[in-house]
Image (cartoon, rainbow, N blue to C red; front, top):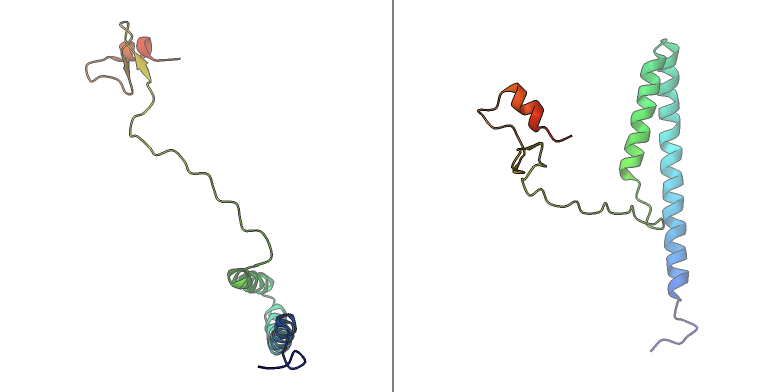
Length: 118
């Protein structure tokens, strides 16, 4: 067994891995930044400002696609909607009290107007 002096605490290992990941991210940003800046300046110099902005919007969208914050709370799930039973609400009621979701075939416009639920 290893002595406690030789054992590394998990928090130390995680901190080391995070530091390495952070430095790799910084290196990637340093590589990408000049290329993006050069491209945007070139497009704007050609008087294509809308295209430059469109490019930057696409970059933001791409970054958002890759972005997943594990520390932030997850998005609340939408409540489950009731299943559609296929029955539409009644629109018409006959004088006898029978309800229909649509007008009967033999009804005239006058019937429809009289039996329409308000």
